[in-house]
Image (cartoon, rainbow, N blue to C red; front, side, top):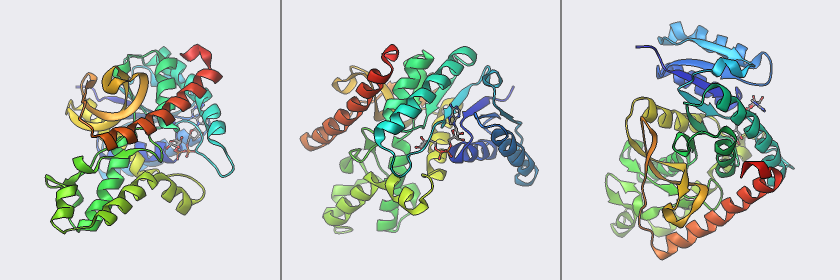
Length: 320
Ligand code: APR
């Protein structure tokens, strides 16, 4: 059977890491696209030259032309600029919105049957814009944020309990911002919910609260350390997990920014919610019960996402 074709739009820090991971996991052949000449070509050749040593088979093509993504099965979008010091959220939104419009056009023309995963920030608004610009079905366009935010939560919890990361499950919902909603009740170790672990005396509420706060600020923590860019290893790994679930029809239940049409009482909005990803893309949006406190946190997060989308609609009225 022919290998799947994976197109990576954006050959920066995350794009390059995605290209390597896609090969290592043998998910398919890779097309790496960027507007900068030479970068996708150079990174593609460099990784292809690593393949004999690492022991995987995949072809790599670096390109500056959208034609090369024709017929892609999966597209992962990281094109755009990361937020730099002195840049307002609106500046970032303005620049990346224009990038999403270009990328959406390219996908619409050359790969309308692809499953598209958006990573570009501000995520919840950019994935909304990308779906509108590409015109692809809403179940085939998702945003990657929840897997990353939950992975950070899981890592911090595993460190606190000194257990394997494999035994820690965690759920983070809502928008990909400081007011995301780490769901303590739905997170725990080997099936034991966090509130029970507090009651058992294995940790304290104060420590759990601190971990929740650190998770919320997880992106900023990395930016402050790196100074010249934002996180890329964990975001790339998270998108690969989503792509794998689609390509292998694994039906993983993962938190992702999905298009809501009535779920959680919301419409025409992308928001981080639990979804099942299988061969048909987003196959199900899972509506979990929230208590009053969780609902209030989600409402706050929704308000931030709505504000960003309204800003997009103001800049590009044609998208709505
Ligand atoms: N089309 C295609 N690629 C573009 C375009 C465009 N219109 N504009 C910029 N790019 C490319 C840049 O040339 C660069 O190679 O997108 C790439 C972005 O890479 P980095 O700047 O290294 O950013 P990265 O760390 O990969 O993050 C990408 O993901 O997490 C988010 O906030 C982050 O929005 C950012 C995105």
